[in-house]
Length: 270
Image (tube, rainbow, N blue to C red; front, side):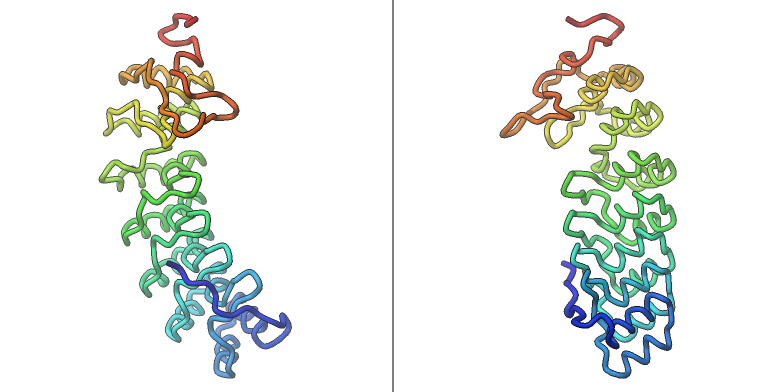
């Protein structure tokens, strides 16, 4: 678990605030002077951002390194639960990411909404950061509270190189959801074919029991629907709705895909 910032500034104009400004600006000597004069190295502002967070965001590798050498808390979290590694990954600061991980940062830390550093890097198309995190133990299976994985968000954003890299590293084949569903939503046959290349299960389900064919049928996406049918997707597959009726944009998915579209095999469905 990431630890919250230990102290919050009482006065934004005092030495503590000046220390944070120095770190954000990359002024190493100034920042160190404030520490030598008694400023808490882990002090943070009203949003929970400390010097390590601010320096990481701006890519100040030397400041980050010096703060860590002086035992700054590498996994201190902001009010939203973001660590310095989250922030550096989101900003694409590859060198900072490497320093943080080398100094013990938790590569699988999750923010309040379940975001991981890998998710953030994938979302922003930071290929080098994604590769480094994967090489250092980042998990692809950790999803946000909405159920999105790094693969899903990369696919949604159209980051093809990141998608390919994530798929290459998906040795257990467990992170494709909801990626194939997103491909179905976008009628992206290239992505769908790539996802199905090493996994012949065209009826893979989302948490609420929907298959990619449900999604393709709902949006009238005939290209992906045809691909899925060619991969033996079940036309009569019924979504398993738990506890209550689930919907996607107000469309009831408690029925089979044929209830949503009449384009299967070119024959109208009544």
